[in-house]
Each structure stands twice: as structure tokens, then as C-alpha cells.
Length: 278
Image (spheres, rainbow, N blue to C red):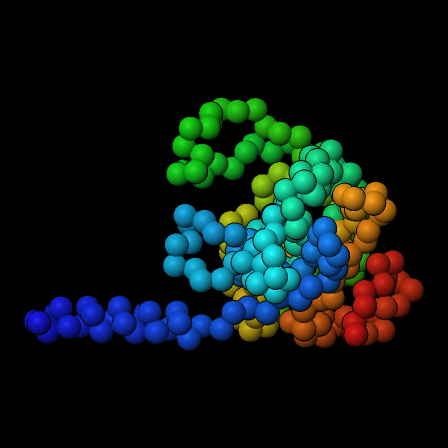
């Protein structure tokens, strides 16, 4: 065996060992019965296997299956960098029923995001979006396909201004925003907030690169600041309305302190969303 061959074999062995030693991300079950299960998906975890991530070992679908002890069926998706509530069905029958609810927009989805700039007015944005196509997966899709309806309601909750320059201004301003998508287009919330000139922090595709770099370096946390906070749906078997809500990860609370949003501010009467900080 030549030295070059030996080095190649050794590097492959090290890579395999690193993968073997990798610890699975923690997922928390938020709701479960005989038909459905809702989990908290951490940021950075893919929903299921994809040709784009051949070297990934862990996926929300497989981790959920292993935790509940049965096969689960995805009924919607969260982008890889987005954390929060992810819903699965335990049978194809229940999955079809839930998918119909998503298609008919009868499921209520609520998100929290941190965006660039202060915001003061709540409104609903009705702004059609061209479908974002993947070079491989969507190679047969017509690139001239008409834009699809996309509607998002947004409501600013808190504003912050910190005495650090992140561009041409002497200070940096941010807002905590409550978002409710009424349609389910790819990257809808990220694209709609970018359209409003208030991109979500940490969005490397549609966001502000300079702000992302400042935010990452100044606060020492690298993620997309978007979380699926609450999901309400009709139970596919009983018809009962089910509301599932998740807690914010600790990194959100750490950042809130840095932005001047302490516990009193988050749970006070001036914050209509009443964010839990337990």
C-alpha cells in the first residue's frame, strides 16, 4: 500500500468514526396519541432523507419513529434551519386527512421571528411568489410557471435598538415579529419578510448578509431566527381542535436579554403575545 493510498484510507476511517461518534439531536414530543405525534424539531435537522444530504445521519422522521416505536408519516415540512413544531401521522389514512387540512389552509400556523429594523404596524401581505426550483429535483418543472398566491399576516411584538453599528448607521435595530402564513409556499415567511425590507436574521438565502455577519459575530450564535411556535389542527379522527405550542430554545432567551427584552417585557401587558419564559 502506498503512502498516498494509506492516507486516503486513514482519512475515510476517521470520517466514518466521526459519523459513528456523532450524537443524535434531541427531539421533544409535544403531543402524542394513537394517530398523531407532534415534536419540537431543533434548528439544523432535516425532516427526512434527501439526495441533497447523503452524508447526514439523523433526520426528524427517523428519530421520531424510533422514539414512538412505530412508522410515522410526514404531513408538512419545516426548512432545515427553522426550529419548532413538526407534525407526523401514524398511518397513511391519518396522514391523508391531515394533508387535506394543510391543503385547505384550515390549519393555523404561528411563528416567531427576529427581523432587521423596527416594525410598528400589523398587516397582512398578499404577495404572490414564483416557485423556487431546485436544479436537480425540479429539472422538469416549467421555469415560466406563474407566481402562486402567498398570504402572510404579521404583527410586531417588540422593538430593540442597540448601540452598535452593523452598517452605515451608528446603531442597530431589530424587531420580534409574530407571523401567520395563510398559504404554504416554499420559504414563504423568509421571502415575504425580505419583500417588506425586514429580512429574518440568519437567513443566508433571502436575508441581509452584513446584518447576518454582525449578528453572528456580536452575539456568538449562528442560526436562522425563525421558530414554528404554535400549530392548531382538527384531529383527523375525532374532529376535535388540537392546539400544540412549544417553548423557545434557551438561545432565544439569551438573545432577548442582549436585546433588552427581559422577563417583565416578554410577559408584560405591552406584549400582546405574552411569551412564556419558563
